[in-house]
Image: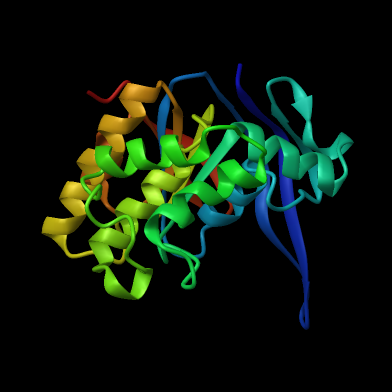
Length: 226
């Protein structure tokens, strides 16, 4: 089992008192699976993603990646797990504006100390159809091109797990469809485990499993979707 959540809860303090964002969540995800997390806004989808990725810590319960409890690690150790095993794609792209497309893709590999970062980054930019745009800065690229750079960046270093939070949410339907296909093609090529938060039902149905969040509770909505 690559990822396990055991009795996972998230409670935050508000001016009106404690607010439980996640009820006790149990989920197990195998290596190579594609999993969509769906649900209404505010249901806890992005919170769950952040906890599974080790970006945030649970109030109660455990997250295990490769049988390693994230709660047993300090922030530096969790950062190393993220650098070694995890890639991210965000709705807002989150590219560094002062870096070129090539430099943005290289950045995670360089931070992780991987050799051959530039070669791998160039190969990934070619895979996403931007081999002639590597020297452009984010403000010189369209939204779809920026998201393709973000996808290339997420796959650099060949992470075991890819987390995507509304990866097509800021794109028009035509561009989003192209980015969606690219994401699944690369995921298949690299054998990555994909966990995606999305409002797009068609995108969710392309995943092998669909998990539904409802008021902080998680349930299996669909299984083995073609």
